[in-house]
Figure: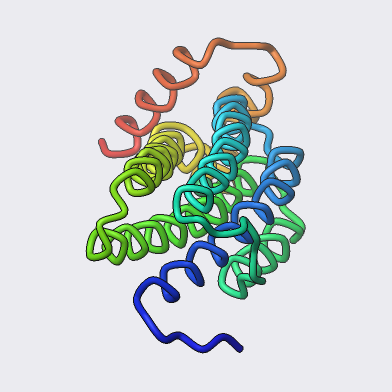
Amino acid sequence: MATIDSLRTLVIEQLRDIYDAEHRLTKAIPKLRRKAENEELREALDTHLSETEEHIARLDQVFAAMDEKAKGKPCAGIKGIIDEGKEHVGEDYDEDDLRDAVIIGAAQRAEHYEIAAYGTVIAHMRLLGEDEAIALLEETLEEEKACDRTLTDIAERVVNVEAAEDGSEEAEKAPRRASGRRQKSAGVSRLSTAADARTRARARKR
Ligand code: FE
């Protein structure tokens, strides 16, 4: 247990926590990606994996700017979120869309944790006037927020819409025609998949 004797020590502790969280995520994201079926979701996870690697590189720069050794300290928060995600994603799902919806939820839990962690440490660093380091962390924070928005977009536009159809009466009556899996394996473009999703969402509202 560390003795927190100043805001600076507190900032370093938080950076070590985030550093560990980002490292854990570089291992967790590929596992989610392997289970994902939706092509847009896979792309979003791939993009965020490379961003996460960049976030680690930025944290290295932040530690250097603050004359501190770059090192992590086990982050119980993200570990819990990753463990829970693994458990939820590992359940048996009748349809891939249902699992994809769970993958998005798991990834967004991680993003929200990171958004909170970066937001707090940036606020504390402002009080210390660590401008160079703050600029680096703000770039990362923006990427975390953008990833969260992308995941919301994929969920609302495609995955949740298709998951809602799985096992519903409509889906039983019109078997497989509108199935996300069939469309995906047939290589239908994401635009037409999205357009279909909107048409079906409208049809349900009527
Ligand atoms: Fe992230």
